[in-house]
Length: 536
Image (cartoon, rainbow, N blue to C red; front, side, top):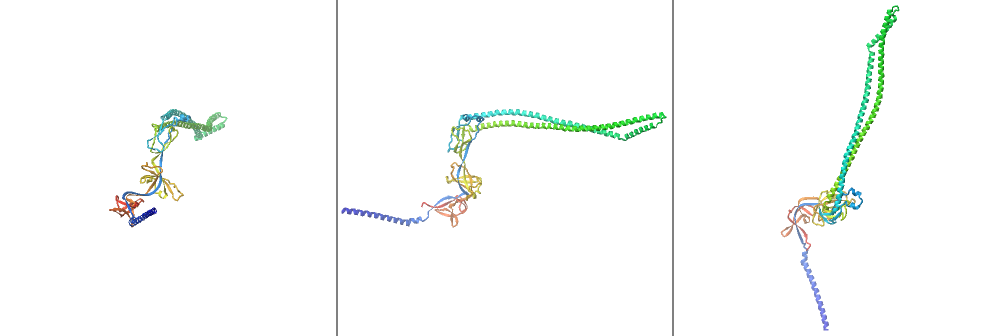
C-alpha cells in the first residue's frame, strides 16, 4: 500500500506541475496582449515616414514618345575579289597546275566569336603561292606589252597603206572631174562656134538682101533694064538703008546687053549666095541638133564616170575610216589589255603585301570564309565581323507619332541591361510602308543608329527609344513624384530645423519624370521625397 500511495502521489504532483505551467503560459499571453493593446498598437497606427534628399537641378527637360526594340549588329564583310586568273589558266585543264596560280592559305589566325581589332592578323598565305601568282601575272603583263608593241606597228603601217590607197582613189576622182569639165567645155565651145557661124550667115544674108533692095541698086537695075530695052527698040527701028545706023544700034544693044547680063548675073549670084547661106544655116542647125544630142550623150557618160568616181572616192573615205577605226580599235584593245594586266598585278601586290591579311575594322567575328590549305580560286568573304559603331535599333512607331519624327533627329536610348545609362542615337530611316495596315493600330518601322561607345552592347538586347517631341532648355526642375498637392497647390518638402515642412511652388513643363519649377525653390537647394517607411 505504501508503494502504491507513493506512485499515486507522484502522478498527482506531475499533473499539478503541468497545470501550473499551462496557467503561467496563459497569464503571459494575457499580459502580452495587454501590453500590445496599451503600448504597441497605438504606436503602429501612427504612420512612419522616411525622407530622401534631392537637389534642385537646372538644365533641359524633354518629352516624347518611347518605343521598345532590340539591338541589331551591323555586319561588315571583308571580301576577297581579286582577279588573278590568266589566259593560261583557261587553256590548262590540269587542276594541280591550275591551283599553282592561286593564293593558298597557310594559317588562319581568327575564329568565329573572337573580338578583333583593326589591324589584327586574319590569314597568312604561303610564299610559294604568292610567288607563283606574281610570276603568272607578271608574265601576262609582259605578253600584253609585246601585243601592244605589235599592234602599234600594225597601226602605223596600216594607216600609211590606207592613206596611200585613199590618195590614189581621190586622184582618180579628181581626174574624172577634170575630164568631165573638159568635155563640157569642148562641147559647149563647139555649139557656141556653130551659133556664131549661124549669126554671121544671117548677117551676110541680111546685108545682101539689103543691097538688093537698096534704092540706088533698084534705080541702077531700072536704068540697065531701060537701056537694054531702048537698045532693042533702036535695033528694030534702024533703017536697013543706013548701015551705019544699024551698026551703031547693034553696038549699043551689045553694050546694053552686056551691062544687063552682068547686072543680073551679079543679082543671081547674090541670090544664090543668099540661098547657099540659108542652106548652110539649115546644115548648121542640123549639126547643132546632132551636137546637142552628142553633148547630152557625152555629158551623161562623163557624168556617170564622174559619179562612179565620186562613189569610189566616198568608198575610199569609208574604207580609210574603217581601216583607221579597225587599227585604232586593235591598238586600244591591246592598250586596255595591258592596263588590265597592270591593274591586276598592282591590285595583287596591294592585297598580298607581306602575305598577311589583316582586319580592316574592329568587332566580333561572325564568319571566317577560308580554312588552312584552301586556295582562293573564287571571290568570297574573307572575314565578317559585327562592328560596334554600326549597331542599330528598330522600333515600330504609330502613325500619330511618326509624323513628328524625321530622319536625322536625335533620340535617347536606355538599355534594360544597363539601368540608368543613357545612349544617344539618331534616326537613320523611316519606312513609309505601314507594318499593320489591317490592324487597329497602324505603325511604321523606324531604324535608329546608336552613337558613341557601344562596346558593352550585344545583339538582341532590349532598348527603349525615346523620340523627343517637346523640349525646354535652361530650366529649374525637380522629381515629379516629389511634388505634393496640398489644398489644390503644388508643394515640396523642405527641412526646417528637425522638421520637414511643405513649401508651395509654381510648376511648368512636365515630362512625366521631372517637373519644371517656376517659383518657390531655386537651383541647388535641397528638397525631400517623402515615402512610407516599410521597415517599421
